Length: 115
Image 1: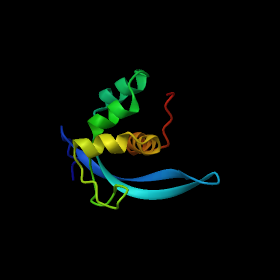
Image 2: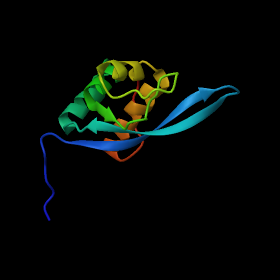
Image 3: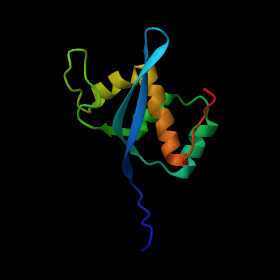
Image 4: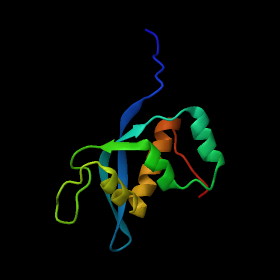
């Protein structure tokens, strides 16, 4: 069977988010998000361009998440939309986990960026 090359492709990926907690601990939670797959040339461009911020990358590649992945402080589900995406990406440890998982999903190994 031949491998199918698609111009537009997306995939669901599990992300572990480590929320800081009292006493120097972390509370880990897993969520499933949907990423848009980028071309290798675009990934290479991002890696070379240290000025490109994680939020800018995620604005482009984060295209969804499972219902119930994120809730507000009253427990209401944050459905995927532009406003909720901005809210989620405003949380540093969530943004960091998302960008790390995106690059690891593309490379098959742990990813390290300078910034």
